Length: 410
Ligand SMILES: Cc1cc2nc3c(=O)[nH]c(=O)nc-3n(C[C@H](O)[C@H](O)[C@H](O)COP(=O)(O)OP(=O)(O)OC[C@H]3O[C@@H](n4cnc5c(N)ncnc54)[C@H](O)[C@@H]3O)c2cc1C
Image 1 (cartoon, rainbow, N blue to C red):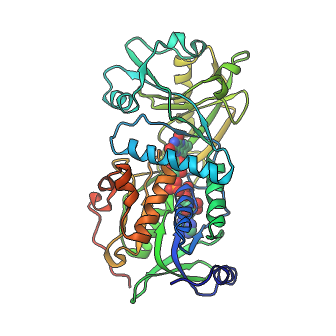
Image 2 (cartoon, rainbow, N blue to C red; image 1 turned 60 degrees about the vertical axis):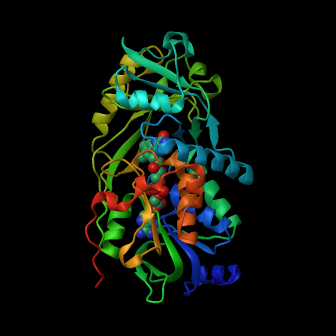
């Protein structure tokens, strides 16, 4: 069906029109994993990225993402388990190490239903925090504090994306950056034509769209479909550890990743990527336009909320008096129910376009699983691995949003 790998490489270099089995649009963690999964199946695969590879304008950059079993909704732990197996396989195949194991601490008011569900799903054991990690945490009276010891940890985000891109290329995929997709057309005889802003056109039997915060814009423009995915401007904050406390808060000392379910939904990772600093941030942020960001709205409020949390929960170990030492901006792509979108677009495109989007601030850990499912949906028209792994894809359908009828493009 597809042209040879060498011919495809030449086509990608010259912009000639040639046919791929699968064209993946967007090279964040989801697109990079999907391209690797498709190429591993022997599909001639093209991965197109609008900016430089490993850029910092989307959602998948930075040094750390939490992987944990503690989940409020039952549809996610099976996907985390599938992903964990695929993370291990990718590490073995590439020789990279991207996952640093760590326990996970969940804490919050004892009656908090979300906390109780997360603790149950992870099989976490209640602990006396005053006896753990040198008394680094002080939880208020009446809080539940529980630790899951196995399967969690910290993923190096940018390195993970690089790993899957390298593996995709190793399996024969063509990867092109600075290639912004501006149009995707359905071919009358089946398949799609993907056009970039420089006028190049690539033909694909199938197309996988993994464009993160740009999903609503791109699908509105190419298919006239409104999918409610709202980009939020979010912040990653690193704080100075108080002198003498540095070693105890390190990953190699067994310090946990953590989630706090109080009024301020705070999360953190052990000191790892920046010695002497610890990452403590909170969920959420103001809505933003990914093409027109001011890089600052809401930063002060988020920083003050996290500083207040540190003063209450880790006053002896983390310095919140000054500003955070390092700030990094990121985007979360939120759906109304915070559940993912993993589905065929349908309408005019039928099963020729698969969409993976709306990962709502918690998708990174499941990237390899999502990529595998998207690739299977594109290649096979079904996701067999989802059935084997107990992942119920019904939760991730586009039609749960009551999407406006698809318009026929003019
Ligand atoms: C601060 C922060 C902390 C987080 N913490 C965690 C965590 O601890 N654990 C966890 O599991 N998850 C976490 N997440 C969520 C996770 O990082 C995201 O769910 C995940 O990175 C989303 O990946 P993506 O591939 O969908 O999007 P992206 O990484 O944004 O990738 C989309 C890509 O598509 C490209 N693109 C867009 N338009 C086009 C176009 N027209 N043509 C070609 N390319 C295009 C973009 O340039 C981009 O590279 C966090 C997110 C943030 C922001």
